[in-house]
Length: 284
Ligand code: SAM
Image (cartoon, rainbow, N blue to C red; front, side, top):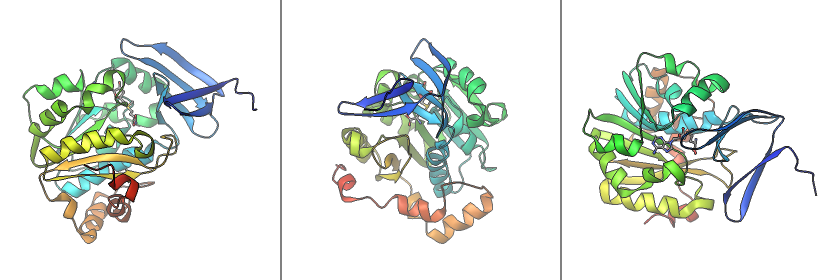
């Protein structure tokens, strides 16, 4: 048996864990909301964990952040106002702000400590997003923010932790109902919805709520190596027709956006909505 001294064990699931070797620990402390750690790993670079669950790594975050921004923004075609719930590391804001047509991004993050910490220890993730004048950072519980009245959004992205601890409120029918209320006509709600092979009930729960709220409710997939257990699901809800966008239109919009990506392509966008049988069977 390998000596696991100096490894961090992420035990998000009852009968499965993943281990990442820590070549150095850069930070380990508690904020008012959660335990915050960052360490160096030989394969993934710097790794951020919250309550010992991997949140983001320097090496593979591009997959997750590209797929939760460029898919809804390019499908929408004219997104000007984007809301990010969570996203404390700044990666989601980084990708959303790469679209010149996006005039305003509101980011509602519950833990100021995560933002300040990631600015210092993981600057490559936000890559200057926090200095972009289009970004409005709000330190608040995303559920409380969503309950309030306020301006509408064309795309709402829930970039939260898993439904444990502070993230739990962001996986409720009430939250989704308020999110729908804050969408502009044709707006799209997308959510971090876990790895269905490991956390299928989470996806089923979100999809049940989305099907009651939206005329187009489904999910799409991308595989992020450090979200262990196979493809990750992203919830998709809209009353618009954004999902019917022909490939040629997505290709033209992607070319017009002039964004260089490591994972997203219009073909991947289209294919991401093709669900394997075991995921389809999780859909209500
Ligand atoms: N990529 C990660 C994943 O898929 O699990 C998410 C990364 S991001 C760091 C998650 C963020 O959600 C954290 O900064 C956390 O503080 C924030 N968060 C958790 N619960 C929240 C809530 N109720 N309102 C706003 N932000 C919340």
